[in-house]
Length: 248
Ligand SMILES: Nc1ncnc2c1ncn2[C@@H]1O[C@H](COP(=O)(O)OP(=O)(O)OP(=O)(O)O)[C@@H](O)[C@H]1O
Image (tube, rainbow, N blue to C red):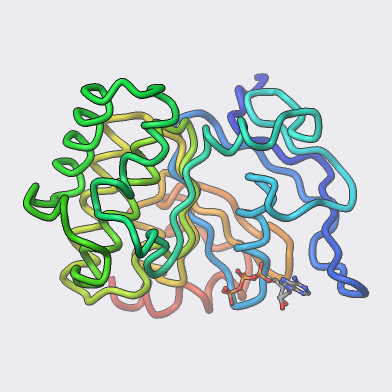
């Protein structure tokens, strides 16, 4: 059956100088999927994420979003449809929380202040932030709150795709659990396609509708968490999941 891919890589190569990190990479992420990327350090997770939004150019092959080759697309327009949340705070330090979240909606709503205000309120609620925080600056928030604002900001632009690179890496265990629950809920409620890089196997298995396991730039297994728990295709995956499987 023909797959309906939201994001598709066809024969993608990526070299860093002499280092042929990625060779002939092929995959399809369907609309509404929540794909978690795991693999040892240096296996190419961040590189793949940044190739999707064009931050890293490819050497050969093709990347399609909504069946359109991104090489032929306007990158600024493309990125407006792709949210990007990374570890730590990426907020504008000189802007309040409200300004940070409303930055892109303001551009999109072309000065319709009421509409922007509603968008900001909606996302503050969804990520669990009190409205008295709107007038604060990023350095007046805890790390976990900053992270929530960052997620609200990436979602307020109403993207079709959300790329997340270890977004909960810098927060304590309790905040991380809350953020995991929230992102799950946001995914269920909005049907957005999410690609999520993590080092945390448990996080990958509990959030992902599919897990992509990478080893030195290759996909070694790409399947549902259930299938991966049932059957690990090689010893690298067994080692990667070892602790988790033993724990279960
Ligand atoms: N700009 C660059 N120039 C040269 N080599 C790079 C560059 N960016 C990444 N690399 C190398 O490419 C490989 C993959 O990097 P990447 O950041 O994609 O891995 P990763 O799986 O996200 O790693 P980690 O889990 O440590 O964050 C690494 O060996 C890295 O050193």
